[in-house]
Amino acid sequence: MSDWTEDPEGRYSNHLEIAHNAFEFVIQFGQFYGEAGPRIHTRIITAPYYAKCFAGLLEESVRRYEETHGTIVPVEP
Image 1 (cartoon, rainbow, N blue to C red):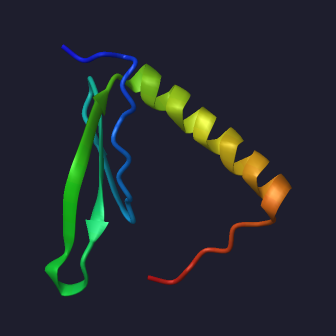
Image 2 (cartoon, rainbow, N blue to C red; image 1 turned 90 degrees about the vertical axis):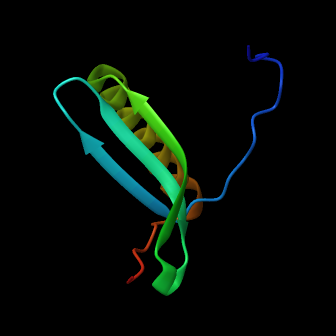
């Protein structure tokens, strides 16, 4: 069983995949390695309600980031 006092492992991600069905959202994080393609290292499965909460929190965090650091400029793949 996990101990909530432990620090979770941090992983870098420059690749994101999101899928859903009627009951859950599946969010996968990974690293993209050129021609080798993406290597998924983290998969989060959650209910639609929590996916919507996450989307709202992420949108608010991006807004605050841009207020502090300026507009995030999209990069071409």
